[in-house]
Image 1 (cartoon, rainbow, N blue to C red):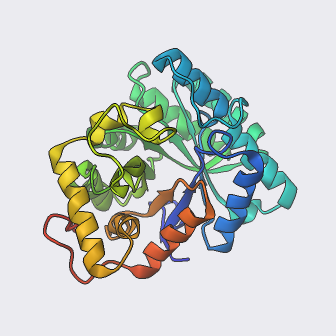
Image 2 (cartoon, rainbow, N blue to C red):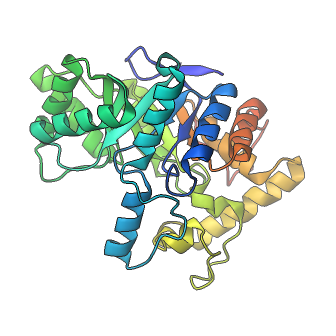
Length: 328
């Protein structure tokens, strides 16, 4: 599979990565391992996980924050995504073939970041992580301390590169400024949402990544299923077990007349081209020059096939004006 450099880290990243938030939550361990094997056979060797991914975390979050049960849950094991990947790595000895990404969730103090990375390494059954990310911005820890913590674990050889997820462009700029001022190693990659119905990255983050030579990992390329066209705007009628059913807040992100028009435009264009709409939606994200890797949160091998077919398809000769990706 084609690769792109992950920032200035020297790590070659495949154009498609495997998102593993579903491991132990929506799919059990046996199916998760089958998905990894299949992804590798299709050339996808980047695994994106997090300490927060897993059935136990999903269950507790839904119960405590939303007051609902997660009907997709297949395991109550906490940190099940990292643990499943770790057991898979131990069983086949293919660590050198994998670009492994994981994340620290909260509390970016030096002490906690060290504890968190060591715990992830133990669960993943490896002695290094290729890319370690802040999962979201921590307003309670000074950014300079958080960046210092990442520098320390990189110098210790526990991670090859570090970056951030779900930061704003302003927060990434602040991080780059601080590392330059303090003589620290800089972050090398950003992970953020990017799809036809969530295009904010085109306006700020992608131009920043291009100018600073940062890697960009795009998640949710299909908008949590919104771009499939299965939602009507009726908040009381989400398909049972769908992502919108389990996390109704998705509707707050995607339900707008502009986005519903985007879905109609996408499906009309797909019909004219004779190409599946979701394949075009994935290809749209890949079409951005500043996107390094697009993450496919696969629950079936068919999801992987769609992602790979999108890469093989390449961008259409011309997009409709309403769908035209910005050249960043």
